[in-house]
Amino acid sequence: MTAFPASLPQLESELVYLREFLERDVPAWFEHLGDRESAHLTGDPTPASIDVCFEWLNAHRQAVRDHTALRWAIVPRGSIHSVGSIGLMRVEEERVEIGAAIGRAHCSRGFATAAAVLMIDYAFRKLPVPHV
Image 1 (cartoon, rainbow, N blue to C red):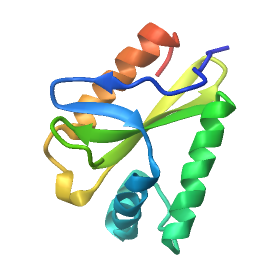
Image 2 (cartoon, rainbow, N blue to C red; image 1 turned 90 degrees about the vertical axis):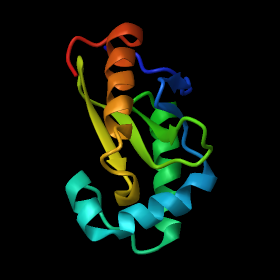
Image 3 (cartoon, rainbow, N blue to C red; image 1 turned 30 degrees about the vertical axis):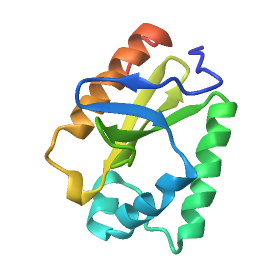
């Protein structure tokens, strides 16, 4: 079985760094998911209120504690504000999937691609998993 860590390591590239998702990230997450087209493209539901996003944050944290999923905030270098999120989810015993969401205002800048490269490297080198 693929072993997920009990806490999230910070991952870095020249363009972005990935860190734990914090309460201060929730308003931007709510704004992004309130954009129905963006939410549809990422497969995420549209939250009824910001409180729902806080519930999701708690659910993501529980998934880390349960070793079933990991979710990071995507932060551009030189900023402290997240522009999206990316995660690894166990879908089978030896396979994980990557899911990412970027706010519309931050699309087409390479942030999701840079984050995905970090995720794939992390999955193969640190977990390790045979299939992503």
